[in-house]
Length: 170
Image: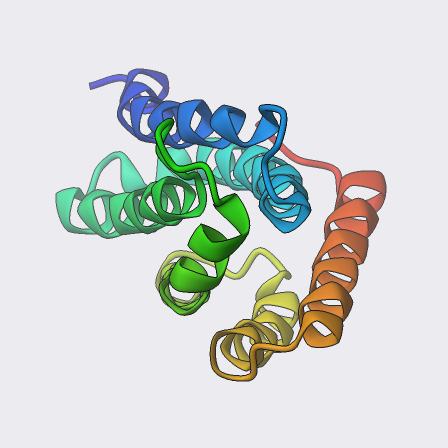
């Protein structure tokens, strides 16, 4: 099978996550949900390009391909957890209710990416992932606004740095 054709599978999975994230841009949604949605959209874009870059390596190995699909599935589940249902009017209360599962899913997603990059080939971003794992865990277990803001700024800064300096080879 053509490696580029295999990109449809994670593309559909990421597409479901993106559709969930777009729900966060409605009026009267708690601002942290919208801020996290922006960060997750940027992360989704970055993950998609990294996946496209590595598709030639995993296309011939069904085990590696299946493992690489775990990352978009965890990410999409985190997107789903972040966005409240249409009938939820107290989005602030909802956010605090799902805060721990959201950050644990994002930690698992980051950890799976570390494993994938170690097995396939190092893309040079494992340092950022190793920094991100404790930061995401900190947000999951120490639920203070200033911690979440610092982590969002750190992750946003890392994403902007990567977007402006890294040349993808798709």
